[in-house]
Amino acid sequence: MTTTSARAAAADVVIRTAGLIKDYRSARRGRTTGHVRALDGLDLEVRRGEVFGFLGPNGAGKSTTIRILLDQLRPTAGYAEVLGATPAAGGPAVRARIGYLPGELAMQGRETAGDLLEHLVRLRGGRGSGRIGPLAERFGLDLTKPIRSLSKGNKQKVGVIQAFLHAPELLILDEPTSGLDPLLQQEFLAMVREATADGATVFMSSHVLSEVEIIAERVAIVREGRIVDLDDVATLRHHAGQQVALRFADPIRADEFAEIPGVEDVEVTDHTVRCLLRGEPDALLKAAAAHHVVRWVAEDRELEDLFLDFYRVPAGELHAEAEEVVVHGR
Amino acid sequence: MAVDTAARTPTPAPADRNGARADGTRLPVARWVLREQRRSLTLWAISLAAITAMYLAFYPSMATDEMEAVMAGLPEALMSGMGWDRIATGSGYLESTIYGLLAPALLLVFGIAAGARLLAGHEEDGSLELEGTAPVSRRQLLLERFAALTFGLFVLCAALGVATLVLAPALGMEVTSGNILAATLGLWLFVLAMATVSFAVGAATGRRALALGVGAGLAVFAYMADTIGEMMAGGDWLSTISPFGWYLGGDPLTQGVDGAGYALLAGLVVVALLAGLLRFERRDLGV
Ligand SMILES: Nc1ncnc2c1ncn2[C@@H]1O[C@H](COP(=O)(O)OP(=O)(O)OP(=O)(O)O)[C@@H](O)[C@H]1O
Ligand SMILES: [Mg+2]
Image (tube, rainbow over all chains, first blue to last red; front, side, top):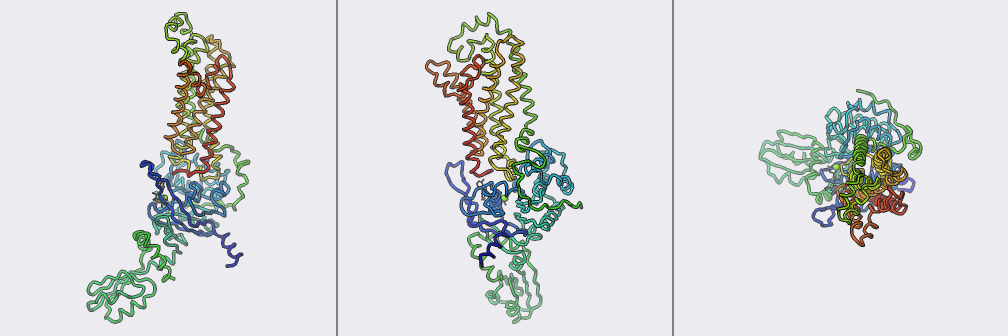
């Protein structure tokens, strides 16, 4: 790659982390000065204008990554960059261009939701003040209620609204739809689409793929502080493969289907073969053609299933497996 | 479905960050914090003024010859330690009831709790997260919250001072207004110093309980050291190192402003604040 194109590519990267490591001090009670490694060499690149899904199970390190990007946490080692500067160096000037929804949104106080939103707008020099009313209406939020009296979902609405108010060029959303009912989730997705249509970049975390796959172009799966898979959603679908079931006229020997390339999880019960097919079906079909095929069923697997695979396998094995998948997936 | 018509503004350079804000608001953080506190501040101010008035109203019945006789029977060390030796004089009465006892005690309760809450407390309960990720530097966030703490204590001391200023001459206490102002200034500095220590510990650690503990511990030490120092022969040095001694050791109600003592209190405020700020700018927030 030439220097100029490298530079052009760099300009289009909105979030970049390289070998990001974060240790939390732990075991305060036990008086041991142990550390919990929350991020263990996290590499990430989010490009301008895309919707990027950041997925992983509880405790994977999603919120930790995000709070480093917002300069709430300082990395133990490694590098992080948002909108062209490290979070600490970028400071308020960079944060002015970001809309952030915390994963653990805590709001207290007797002040009303409207007053809080006005306050947050003032912290941004008044930008977005005119949008409080329309957005509240859109989400059905009563601005006159005291914050502490709001339900979880209503607090989440306040959180979502304040992130979008100033029409930021980068939205960093930590589990944005948690607590929102399905109707409001749709409304939220519509807001994300409008924001990206206007050129905004969206980086959002979630536990569930189905929530992200609708709008995200690319998805990273994080486990135990590392990215174990990074793909565009189309490729991920390809990896997900098909669940195939073949029924034969005669009983089948299990070993016949054991070693076919692209075929996994073979399960033989006298007349029937069930397996997971990734890639082309050719080899499987040729093996099947040696017998009398009575019935053939091939279902696209839900992405969620693949996602669950990533969740279940111990992370150590995953690093190896993820590479393997990429090799025959492309 | 409502249509959002507001156009996405092309990213403006955030040049308006420090200067004139679009809606003309300055110190947005401090204003918000004070706004949240306005009810409790009002109640505290009224209560402090009322308690002051109540105690002052007893003064005419204390300034009698019988009282002097009762006092004369008490051990001298106790008398001077508690400031009772001069209780029948206006300044002595003011010091032993309001300025040396009730006012600091009540204000310390408010100030240390507020100091611990305004940073560590709000950090622990998560309400600092949205502010800390807004385009506000950590320094600005801390200093504005400190300004709110300072102003809140100023309001309370002012309520107490005004009540004294109005009532003392009316009850014939023979304390000059200048000395009342001096003592009130000292009271404010003393309470602010203790509250700032609590605030700074919270800023440095993010632990509200620790901030409360250190603030309260220092306040108790300050009071005990000064009181014991007054009572004990050769205990002067205890008063000398006590912030409470810096406040009342120079007898502001009769002698006016104690330059050295007040400077020490102000110095403690600055040092604690800077130490807290230094750590606050470097550490992880909300962990
Ligand atoms: N303040 C803290 N002190 C110590 N350990 C922490 C702290 N915060 C997080 N951790 C640990 O760091 C790891 C990553 O946590 P993080 O909150 O980033 O996960 P997450 O992906 O956001 O999870 P979730 O989906 O539950 O929100 C976890 O093992 C967690 O226990
Ligand atoms: Mg989280």
